[in-house]
Amino acid sequence: MPDNINEQNYDANQIQVLEGLEAVRKRPGMYIGTTSIDGLHHLVWEIVDNSIDEALAGYSDHIEVVIEADNSITVTDNGRGIPVDTQEKTGRPAVETVFTMLHSGGKFGGGGYKVSGGLHGVGAAVVNALSTHLYVEVSRNGKVYREEFERGNIAKELEIVGASEHTGTKVNFKADPTIFTDTTDFKYNILKERIRELAFLNKGLRISLEDKREEREESDSFFYEGGIQSFVEYINEDKQVLHEKPIYLEGESDGIQVEIALQYTTDYATKILSFANNIHTHEGGTHESGLKAGLTRVINDYARSNNLLKDSDANLSGDDTREGLTIVLSVKHPDPQFEGQTKTKLGNSEVRTITDRLFSSNYESFLLENPKVAKIIIEKGILASRARNAAKRAREMTRKKSGLEIANLPGKLADCSSRDPEKSELFIVEGDSAGGSAKQGRSRMYQAILPIRGKILNVEKASMDRILNNEEIRSLFTAMGTGFGAEFDVSKARYHKLILMTDADVDGAHIRTLLLTLIFRYMRPLLEAGYIYIAQPPLYQIKQGKKELYLDTDEQLRKWQAENSDARYSLQRYKGLGEMDYEQLWDTTMNPENRRLLRVTIDDAEIANDVMEMLMGDEVPPRREFIEENAVYVQNLDT
Image (cartoon, rainbow, N blue to C red; front, top):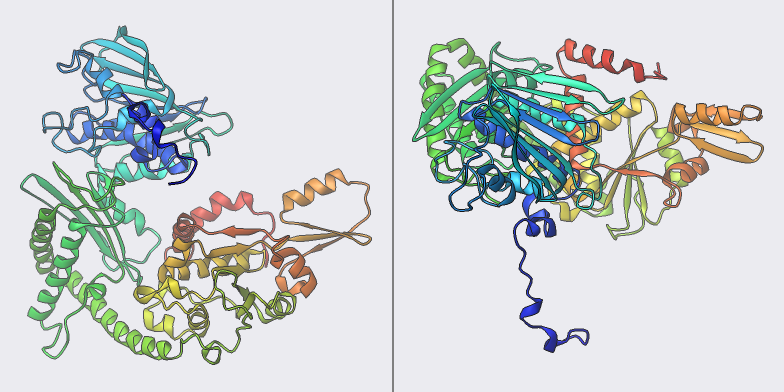
């Protein structure tokens, strides 16, 4: 036993008992996952979920979310209003019980709500515990009731503060900075994206968002009569679709409601968004498994019965039938079972069978009634199957050449001497000129250089066989030594820093986005491991005699010029890395003591992928809209 532990002092007095909401404040991560920015916004969703439950029950059709001037959040709905009468077991008002006791609310025993997203009944109480102050106003019985709390404790007892002709609940809270030490600043765009998603998932429900903070005023309102059908149209607005309207299917069995909207595009990637009781099940689950099984079986059965697949042909695989497909799947379950507290995977076994059965019968009827669309879908799957077989052959050839021996590495790779992946870095550099400077300026012991020529293939618009036949992409796969796609093995990574070093201009940003999309689609574990970085080369060099200064942005240049208006200097703008000599490149961008690297997170990659889909998509209007909205920020557009 270590010397610093005194066994004699370990007695009953050292066993802590956390009462009420004290446990939440002591271990907030157990209830909201994290106290970072994600956990901060989770507070909003817990309160909004309660209002959504009223909408699911048919009692509310408008929810308002406001970021107040003091950075507090107000959520208002026009539902029935939380009950204010005395709760039998606690002897206290029901609304007070909801906000002060864990596992309380109308979501247990099926009496209050048939379907609920906030399953555990801890949401309102947790938000109260993690807020410096919170008040709730309930409009009910012709009166307005109000109760106030501070850090989960009652500050003002429930009282009548006015009269009302309407019903509903209003909650205002301010996150506690002693809990959320990273930030308590709510991000409008994070709230906006989730609120839009909730409006799609609950057709006929209007959800408004407003930011009242000074110089950040903004507002949006979302209402979709088409529900998830509109959701698919929104996702595919920058893509070329193979049939005009998304296919919409719905059904109910044993109290479980299933909604599915799907549409095929000319793309090669598949996008499946699945939800259970409005909760985004990022990891899928039984509902997603049932849908996939039904989709593959129905398409193969239809293709066989209509002689679109010959007897000698193999069945289309699941990947073949889903290529280029956008799906939104939403199930509403009276008693959902999620795997893990984070609720990212649905686990109810009966949902697989029900989703499969409801989808299959409806989808089979749709194909029979729409033979032209059915033929387009089958032909898309057959082309995917042929490409998959070609990719398999290319993959086998690539695998034979992808050993870790130096002789098998790409000829253009200037490898480092170190064989320790934790110390080794691989710079992806655009152009032979910059590649030459990087090779000269690098530290040969631990820095490797892989030049690429121009813009790599846009993998979002390419089949797997084309991807594997692309020399630049194949070189990257081989240099990293990890494989790719489903066979990726991050433990075999030869470098624990993969650094994208492109020019500080529009073309450089485009190349970087294409590389990020490739990594996100086919080397995603590198992102999850934190191995991907972006180098930040300077945009300007200022020389004053022997003194050199590097600046990154036009704003920094203007500021320097304003502060040094009488100075004599020479100014150079770097349009590309190739304009730097190897010493400048080392000093500004590669030297670990001076350089500034940006680590790319999985969220960053998602954003890059979405923007790339929009900018590189087949549809012009979304691209035009983006340029019009952002053109004001463009200072130098390289031609």
